[in-house]
Amino acid sequence: MIAISTPSNTIAICVTLGVGVIMIAAASISVSGMRPFGEQAILEQIDHEDSALCSKFGLATATPQFSDCLIDLADLRQRHVDMLTGWGWL
Image (cartoon, rainbow, N blue to C red):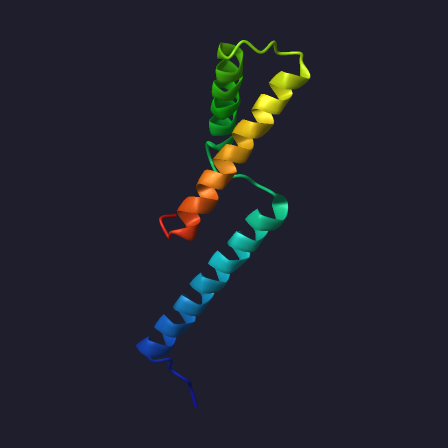
């Protein structure tokens, strides 16, 4: 006897395979440490803007005060993200 699959079984198999492929791809990206497209450019822009702002306040780039300024700006950005997340805006 020959088994003939019904269209609903074929669709279910295709959906299951598709979900499996997506899950494997997501896990692979997560494990490999691959970063989202454009993230490096964004991080470089943030670094440039932070450095410019700290320089604008008259802090020399090779001083501990300049480093403290950069750390404070990063902390401020993180608190901002935490606040937005807390309110459910992100």
